[in-house]
Image (cartoon, rainbow over all chains, first blue to last red; front, side, top):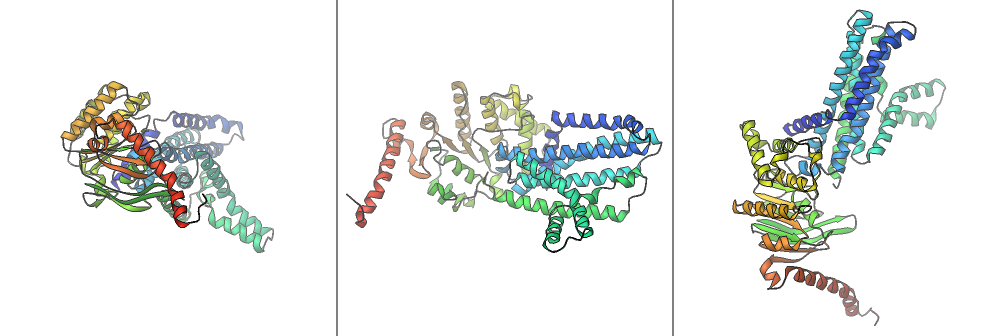
Length: 254
Length: 258
């Protein structure tokens, strides 16, 4: 466990020195502040500040998760920096889990920075503290950690570029897969075609579970059950992905 | 003592280390061979980066891949790569932290002075707080060497440690290796530079296409002739034997054509 934290701490330290990450955070902050004017342009509705703000945080965190998940672990293995680490009393599982935890810490940090900016903007515009917005950002963070786990899993056997393609594909499918099943049933698709859609539903993560932005935008309290279920879903899915990633990485010739 | 017993490594059908059996118990041992001979693969198996297809490597009777043994070893990979945005000191600290026995109960200042001592020893103390991305190739080699010393290892496995160093750097590194030998550490060296082996190794293992062609003292191997000449002779003799072997086999079975 100790080695996992040392690798996580080191990963966090290295990633926050990356200028690309700074660039994304700066753009994210500019966007969150820009929502003040954007919301005035569209409908002149204060709730639009929340809609644009939460979507912006989601978008920028997704870019960060994709960027970190597909490059950080892969680079360490590809550039053979792992030789230094794995020749010490560190197992491959500890290294992989440490990288994941470190990248989660980076995401937590960026979510916190963008989240604080968002809460400040909402307070300034609407005059209330957006507690439900915090729940929405927390679930977005959970979704990003799942996304990160998938990117690391793919990085254990694919190149950085392929990881971007696969992870983006899963991100897209993860958001439409539940709608696909509903639509298939609504229009009466049955037999093998419905079966195929259902297989997709069970294989790919259902990322819609983490979307409670509408609750936050309309100031409706997020039910604790859906929050808890989404959290448990993410934990189980991440555990499965990381177990598979460790299994593949253990077999990999480095 | 390091013992290799019928060590074999194959990637699919390609055998890169072939039934390698050897016992080593000298202060500095050099694996000598051409590029692609299998030296790096052997070293990676010793330090647990690769799993053997078959056979074992034991050090003082224990399997070399065991985590307890890893605490006693230092490893420098060939052409080391680093975290470019770290400084030399930070990299040593990170490597040291991975050995949990070193930090417990030791104050950070004492550890920092330990890192400084190592960096002085390998000659990059002045660049200790510079980011690694600013280091030259020779400095990277020295840092790779430095990190292998961070846990005061009993055994050192160095893969081409003198590669990329200028003549002065080579001399300095060889002196460091000799000093480590006098401290009682055992060093395994991979190299294709014969002069280095001749100068600092007590024994050598000649590796060619994954096979061990010779293992023993350098003096006995050379028998008063230059090491380069003997090395070439051994490799060529093996190549000739390998070419003749199929025809000998077919002649013996009576199926060959004359």
